[in-house]
Amino acid sequence: VSAVSRTRIYSVIARVPKGRVATYGQIARLAGLPNHARLVGYALSALDDESRVPWHRVVNASGRISPRSDESPMAGVQRFLLESEGVRFDAGGRIPLRRFQWRPRRFPSSRPPPRFRA
DNA sequence: ATGCTGACTATGT
DNA sequence: TACATAGCCAGCA
Image (cartoon, rainbow, N blue to C red):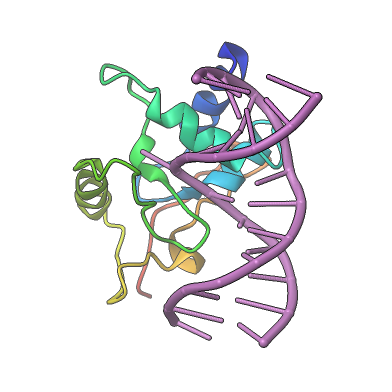
């Protein structure tokens, strides 16, 4: 992935608020890279441990934590981090996107409280 | 150039 | 809801 694309991808992910999640495809679109969902995952795998990009808030379109090809423990860490922020998983290990998916606002004036469970 | 791979998705059964 | 398929496209061999 080109350096410029990675930069755009990371800057979008950095906007995802705590307690919310975004999908790979969503990040790609917002970064101006439609149809490049896979690049988002590719860029994340290249992320260095020192960065402050909230990588754990990116999940796949079915609301699940995407399985790593290498069976690394990062997937488990991701779930832990999300639950720590209040993101709930259902019995099938999926996040109800209707409730937790990030809906970016055109006008950054007001902010979305991560509310759930009326 | 060609073919394969992958932290993906939309669609059909 | 769950698989299978077929698009997708930047890297790399």
